[in-house]
Length: 376
Image 1 (tube, rainbow, N blue to C red):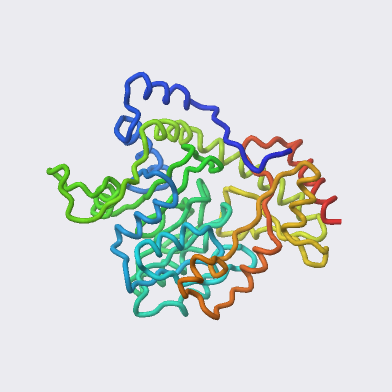
Image 2 (tube, rainbow, N blue to C red):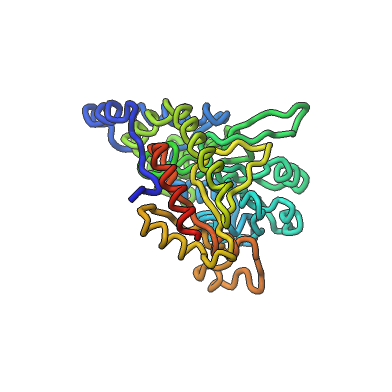
């Protein structure tokens, strides 16, 4: 079975982790914490990095640090992982949804402005499967309406967006936009710490607040004094050591992921009955996952195609199920009567194929042959 993704730990991970074990710095303090935070922030073009336990709590921490709470609304895509909505719900705020763009599968930025109300506090664009959201319209809307932007770059390590804001167009890395940007370092990400995440920001005071809330909101200068409810969202030095080793070879990983993605794009484009994520000229995907949508005319949906591919030795995963279809959200009375047809179609007909950085060219050829056979 060709797996969907497996981490490749080919750098100095063992060396750095061994140093943690030898020195005893295995908890949330140690030299690798600052080094990892600084290295990732620098790579993404940010001033501050605040490492946390996973990508879900990175979003939760960003929402909390921006003082978003009951009575507030946050606009986000319905086609995303539930972590995005959870971060809003945990704060007592209300998630407000927009549908996916049928070509890019990211949030349809043309729908955002109509969802802004007097209660809107933030917009949460989510880069999907390695492809950035069209960020300029989001940033303009946020500035015009005085809204925060929380960029979810969990799936977009090394991806780039060509921003037209300012005097000249410039390519910027995902994670460099808005008030705060959030990453996941789960095992299937381009940079992995097993579990782990990070919030990036350019705002000095916001960075201080993120660090304090991450660590139970201890008061500066007086340990065990707490004026507000914080979180235990700390990352360990062991994980940071692993992450730093991964960041040291991120350019190599991104090059390989793009080569894999381009091979899939070329091969899937000639298979009748499937379509792939668009490649707009303002984005450079990192191809975190390579997805396809199977036409209903084939008689398949994503589930049946996945079953056929598994029989042919190819592992797959289904696409996200929209937030408007999540019982834990709808049972709260959210999204009543709302329809998001693009997301429903993607969820029904989509899946992604093996995409790990260790995938060989022969395996890619085998996957493409299996897809062609399975859709018949």
